Length: 322
Image 1 (cartoon, rainbow, N blue to C red):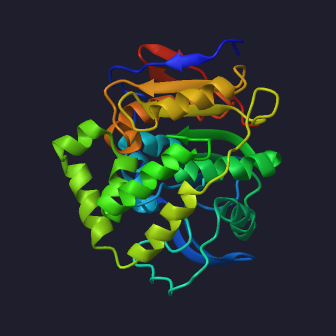
Image 2 (image 1 turned 45 degrees about the vertical axis):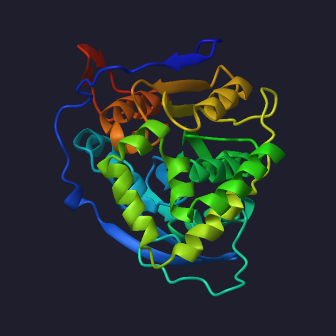
């Protein structure tokens, strides 16, 4: 591993893998899991505990596991990866599709408390270690979990990570936005770039419709408020993650500067930085081919690869399971 921070720019789609797995062959189980801090919804794809770590995902505000990750994990080349791993999607409390609205006065769990729910989920599925994939608020929560449970995480993919608490200027701007903009529009500006919002793409509009019409809109608002009240992660090069990390952000994303700032605080020997060209706020939805390719390289670097694969004319040889 190099001693300098890596900035990866993938500017064209290349076939990562040959062949395709049938996602329908993977067992799918949905569970509502009781934790010491409340019930959390989780979906398991695959057979459960294996020698390899599970891939654990956590979505952003205004999304659930399906709307955040289905495009990426149903992408045909990604199937060659996920068929060899157990896949666990966690929905943060009350955010899953069809969730009932919390009653007035409900005390929604903090980011730290949600992170403390994850060990119970892993114990429920008999999972020892994971490769975490988080977006926005999900990336922050997975980071909290990893810092508290370093032996449980073998790798992290953090998309749109912001490790800093909101300053008073950001707090004031958020208060003003809450007066002038609806909750739906506030969340959309968190998820998407200004260019995407102005273009009013189908993706933006689908999120607008889903959020504004959600039966659990009050739950979404509670998560949004708690994410905006997050604390600093207090990461620096002497106190950071003990596992390999890939930071991902679109070059037009709302959190580009935050991801760059996070990158500057990370250990350069274990961190790679993927700034996606021509990508907006949700690269896992708009650039699944490029993100799949980067993810393949990431897990190969960790020593997990099932078979030789042709990538850009170069054969990548198998590495033994850890």
